[in-house]
Length: 223
Image (cartoon, rainbow, N blue to C red; front, side):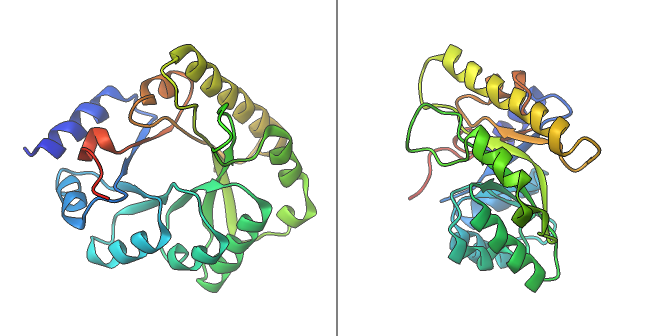
């Protein structure tokens, strides 16, 4: 087995059955992704629309591509034909553009609403009230080609595990509230995307169903 395969196996074996691993392949070459693919992995995460568009035709068609980075409305068109899940919807305007591009491609695109849980200002995302307002809006209810499949959040970049756990716990609690209030009978609303290479263990303990791990699989990124 390769080092990549070994690292993948270690992480996968540490996850509960209900948690899926998104191998974050951004800034890594196609060869590295193929190595992980050959080891049996199928879910990969990218954060640049044009980089993902370029990689897509060079790799097997059964890969489940997740878009995990900040997405600009003018870049949605590059990934709309094939993306499996967009983790980072942080505005109604962006969601409307995804809906528009999904319609053009005769698709329904699953999306996660990104919630701002970190204490850092630099992180994108909706606060709790903005999320509720979006879901209550007539504009949202008029969309036909997107499905809200859950929520995503990023914890503060800190060594304070207590703070990280508290942020993930708040996200999980809010997820439960949103599920109860807006999606009580919707089986599609089930994903909580939280946790990266340094904090995914805490995220899983606090209810994450999707963890986004890159450097622990592929090593340091090649910029």
